[in-house]
Image (cartoon, rainbow, N blue to C red; front, side):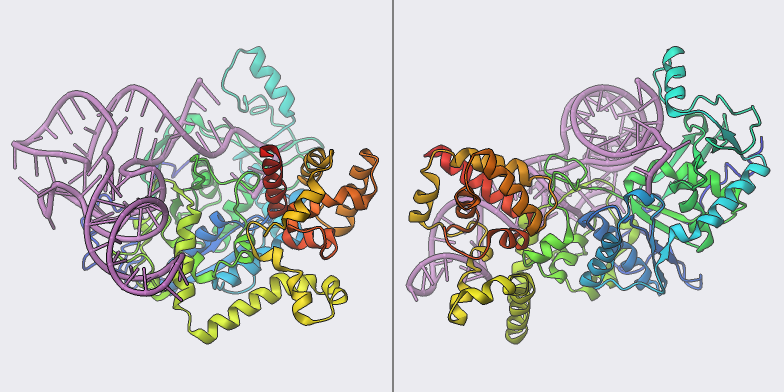
Length: 495
RNA sequence: GCCCCCAUCGUCUAGUGGCCUAGGACACCACCCUUUCAAGGUGGCGGCACGGGUUCGAAUCCCGUUGGGGGUGCCA
């Protein structure tokens, strides 16, 4: 057996359930995770820039930040961009902007995981030379076919190349050799201890056939390299813990981190929030007027609660009373109504002058700045230009009945709305592109663009006249546009 | 299929074997205040998934069942 320390347990964390020092009264703000005199903790928040920054990530960041700051530790930002194909620079900017908006400052410069790729590769190759890993030339299809032929119902790598002693070469990935027997102890601050059977873990890839390191390799290496003491992340990473422990062990680690897997945030159907079907992007909430302090406070009540009967609390209170080991282990549903209630509270509590400043700057940033180029030319007075943006302010646009009748009474209105809904659902959201696809839509009905856009305009703005449609749609955003089109559709059906 | 995780009002949570007739918040309902609407105040509705243990005593500990979720990628 090559795995010397595999039964070693993570001893740094003390579980809340097995201690008697967990009582909140008198113990507020103290944690047994970081004993006095011990070096300050080092945590990292490590999002991958593969989409809009969302509320789940925001909460994980918040918990990391609270834990680091209250213990005088370090909070690092590490961008896990090992999947080059799915990364985009604007997503990275989005991460910075969102964290700044929430007031979560990080230490030092962000680390880009891709920049460490050579070191990851080197470490992986080293693992191979020490016999911890082997090269494998199987494709996913081959593995699948073999499993099917063997009648194996459980998918996963079958160990075909395990003892072939293949050299590195084109088309060959490097796999970590997982022990066949024994178990390891996984200790998690918020989930307790579990004994994991090693036989259930397949030989996983650490270096792709392209030579690029996989997430698990890069992640385990960087955590070790940065001296991360507490890994606080989403529960979807729980199955990665044994792999990370195996890898760290092979790389000579003797001081495993404290693991803390925070529960998912789920939707009202209790599924993990997803970008596609749920409203998750932080910037959408920002644009709809949610105050960062309200969002931050609300996020803090998902999976944790301040002691006492008061859950709307200042950041300082969270900083004093937050305890990682008190985080709940069951998923929390994101309740927009409750967020709104929190927001109303914060809004009312603002000093008058600050309220004015913030309301005005919101209006300027979200509506006036983006609309200025098209409204400035279209009115004789300031109020007249400003009134062109009123549809933007309401969830349901104020509907002008004459406009409605004029645009919707004509035969293809319903069909146009349906076609627009389909065309706008997944397209590039720019004025030029919207113009183009709407023109195509119009020619499909053998109508001019002017005629075809009328039902769309009325559905979205409530009127037949107004600023140029496509610029308006861009500012409104896809979700709100689609929502208004659907609402108009429903209204049309009712007659 | 296999591995893992989870289970207190509709939702977020408090609860760490007796302070529990289960507390608070959001939502909802009623009333009060009020020129309207909010805000605020008062009250109400509403929950320990089920079944077995352990114990003098279980929301709390153990086992099972059921139900939900996550993972099962040369994604992260």
